[in-house]
Image (cartoon, rainbow, N blue to C red; front, side):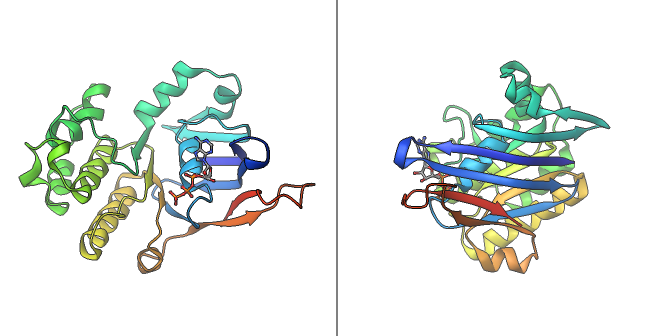
Length: 241
Ligand SMILES: Nc1ncnc2c1ncn2[C@@H]1O[C@H](COP(=O)(O)OP(=O)(O)OP(=O)(O)O)[C@@H](O)[C@H]1O
């Protein structure tokens, strides 16, 4: 279970500052939620903060349950306990970054296996075969990221993010470089794996028909003026269900 309340991040300074605010988010195992909103509203910022890559300016509640244990992530953030936050990032979170974020000196095969290797766990063979098969990664396994198209990088990044069965997968436009057929295949696999493995996921997606096709609940960006400062052009974004 993921439970977040009153998460606020401020990007930039002064009149340029952009506030990103999440009043409430609850996700249960098996749930996947889309995040939508116009370019620049703060979707990546929100994912980076929930993914513990960016320290929020304030946080009311951030709890993540793991094997019956409740982790109070808000306390770790508020007291800047970096080592423990890094441990949570490595073992409980999986990222699909917009630019792929693959390591250039590792082959596709080794990139995909990296999180499992770092955690000292053997990849689930059936799950690995299924991912390789559905995402058509077989012919790419020996290649290096520089030899891949953007779409191939995205498919590889997705495989890498999910193979170690993280509690929470954060995907930033994982289908942006894919054609409609491959986008639907990836989404379908994503949803099935999240449900079957009891993971949770947040996925930034501009493809509204795709979100509707799979009937995903959606966090929607609403523009907001800064309280008490209504004359300023720069306000912020509030993400609501
Ligand atoms: N490192 C930074 N320093 C200052 N401002 C930033 C920084 N990164 C992003 N911003 C600003 O924060 C706001 C939100 O950016 P963010 O990348 O989260 O938007 P987004 O919704 O993901 O956009 P897109 O859909 O175009 O990827 C934007 O106004 C952006 O200019």
